[in-house]
Image 1 (cartoon, rainbow, N blue to C red):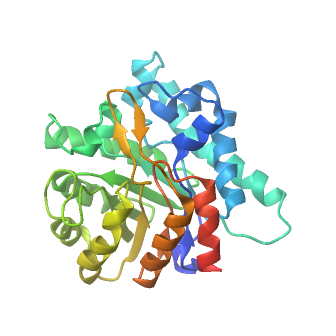
Image 2 (cartoon, rainbow, N blue to C red):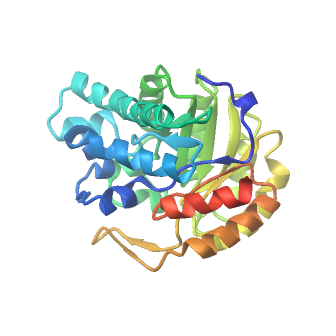
Length: 304
């Protein structure tokens, strides 16, 4: 594991996993979404990681966003096999990093972040876009703790708690992150410049967790780009000594009923907006849903 103290900022993240997999011909119409390929076609995961590394990403996120023990068990895997699939998500990222570094003539540092999505991702019904779950606090804490315990024992550098849509889930994660063995970041998903997806204040969410010593970064992901500049202005005074992380989606609208996207993604516009965000104080930058390698490659023009 590399120390986050040695990171050269701004740090460029990768983009969305699912859009690259779909471009490679993968069918993601499955309750486990892209995590299904950890089981069925792991080489495609490696190819997706490599697409971002070749585009200039310095930190790639594991394919474990929607990977859970319960989810794998639902498709017939045993508990032991399910845990092995969770660990495989890290192995695939490591494999991609090794392939990339072996083919590079330069001495590069590539970081790995273990993706831990919200409880709503496990439900696979679009709940992460609402942040309202019919589940107890105890169940939420058990869900996240179990996944964290498995992934924190791997060779990842960071734990990425991402697309968190509700203040309730943030407060529960604050307890869990305090006991994590690895440096963590948390990123919230917002419905506008003021609110998390559940309607609570983004400022309240930041205030509730910004003093956590295990967090080295916090910010926003899977949020429409048009809201990002105002969100940065709203939360920057409250992030204390943390790094500010931003990786929005493309601004397209996801339709859970058809599992499709509505709208257009433009890398040139993304680059212009990213330039503004970096000028506003963003330390870690990348993309989420529908942000691809072409978008990430343009970030290198801004950070070189």
